[in-house]
Length: 500
Image (cartoon, helix red, strand yellow):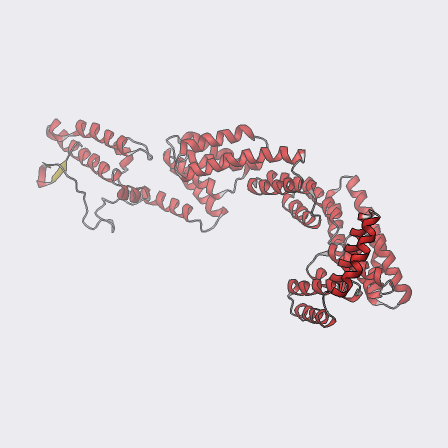
């Protein structure tokens, strides 16, 4: 709009005001604004954008090319070639819907542009709109009967229609494996057909192939930006395989599109509650609050006890926490329930092995560590467990058995057991041959206390290495040392003894 046009606009405005036709005024101003926008770029500027777009396109910089074609289209909205070039970029980016919009605009501006007809026919076919593709391809062949690409695409239409009829028949007969095979073949030619992918996803779900079912639904939700039902179904599939976090993220996408979607709201509340239980379970496990961890697992199981993969997820965590508590029998029970669902879960096998060791069942522990290595070769935890069992069998003394405490006993419990046994077996309480036997037991009791109340020594012992063994490389001095009152044994051996 130029400045010399303003007086004319004012005159027209006065006339409109006198007639009280305000709607006409706004229409008039909008039309002149559009004319101003359309002419806002010079021909040279438009050509510059087109050239830059072409260069970016040749380099594979599609988003940059798209920006320049946007500017060129805005500058000259009646140039059909600019729309066509932009459609090419959209297709390179896999954005079929805006590409189709541009091709529609091209054909509206120039109905006899065969390249656009051919391109639109190809896009329509890939979207599964076979009848519409048929019309465009026939149009091209009517004016260019030897067009190779149009001939190739046209020859595919009838076989695809027949295959689609067979797919519907298979689905009606509940022959999902056959339907999936045929749909996979068709999708090779119609990759943007969201309906076909939804059908294949349903078949994958029926035959228990949840990962492929999810893959198809992820594709359809990208094709259909407002697909709330697709997001709901996708969230439920993630839930079914035990991926609670992804299920929560996906159902939120549904509610973002439609905050009042009833089914999405119901499912969201359920998944969110379970996710909070699992989060509490993990946090308590990491903080070594194992009792609270087990309680959180019980709460989660009360809420969800039917979905097999989620039950495994909960029991797997519960198994780990129980294996750290003074209840190896319960730990073995829960770990076994988790392994019934997934027998090849290497970490759960290791947790059950730990519980077996705590319960003095080394053969069973060895079996589980071995299975864990078979399921996950090179798993360090399983290798260390097997090495520990092997070393323990070589050791002459088991300090836990000497004090009569469990392998997860705390320091206070160990000291209490030590004091009781030390008082009982103190050599001063015995005479003759009994005194020699008491001396030996007393030394073992004191050695057990020294090892099990020292975090570093206890860790070595648990790994299958006796830190007080004179032949051990980690203890070049041999024996053990403590603080307290020296006690003289026969043969010049001195031992330092203390009760506290």
